Each structure stands twice: as structure tokens, then as C-alpha cells.
Length: 164
Image: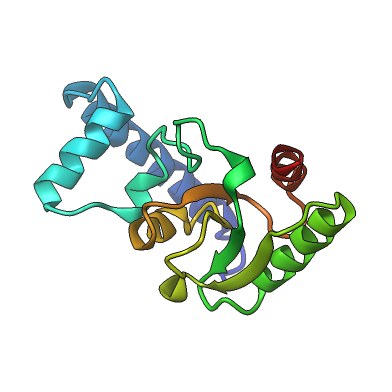
């Protein structure tokens, strides 16, 4: 959108603005006292806000899977949960249902639902990594597994091998 013959001036202005922004940001970063640990910074921010942050939760080094040893032999109900409970979670549940059936594991119900409608009797809840914190708040007693892609996750095979 620069007038004819003024391209060089516009590009020079963009270049100078970039350098000035970099220098100001570098100065601010150098003079500010930095947090040594991102986890500590996240906790401090949540304390100041007075509530947990769903975005900051992804910065924590927590994994969605519970750290304690989970007994997959006791699993009777696997739930795939997403926002609406009809799209991606339905496809993930279908894939898992087929894997459980092929592995000839009996007595396990695999269904899908929305996070808001998670049943209390779910043993294992599988959600997208961005939704796991919400699912854990809704159903803290279940074992939670976080996946990046409902359609193609290597965790499905790991779960089925644990169920055998």
C-alpha cells in the first residue's frame, strides 16, 4: 500500500521499529528480576489471581495421568470426553471400542460424552490434552489420560495392553 517509490522508506521504518522494540524488550528483561522456575511463577500468578488458570495448567509439569500406580484390571468403564461429546470423542471411543474388541477384552464399556456430563462411575477418562484439567475437576476420582489426537494416539495401544 506504499506509494510508488516509497517502498524503501516504509521498509526502513519497519526495520527501525523492529530494532527499537527488540532493544526495549531486552532492557526490560535484563532489569526485571526473573522467576527461576516456571512452575513457581505459575503458582505465584495463581495465588495473586486467587484462582487456577486453565492456560497456566498446561505450563505445569504435571502429566494428565495420575502418578500413583493405576490398576487397569479393575477398569469397567472408559469414557472419551470432549466439549460437546459428539464429534472427536465419539470417533476416539469408536477406535478404542474396536481395539478392545480385537484384543478380546471382555466386560469393558467404552462410550463418549461431554465433560459436563461425565458419569461418576467412570474408571478411565480419556480427553484431549487441552481439556484434561476440566475433566479432572469434574471427576477427580477417575484415572485421566490425555491425548493429542483422538484419531491417532499411541496411548490407545498402551491402554489396551494394560487392560489384558
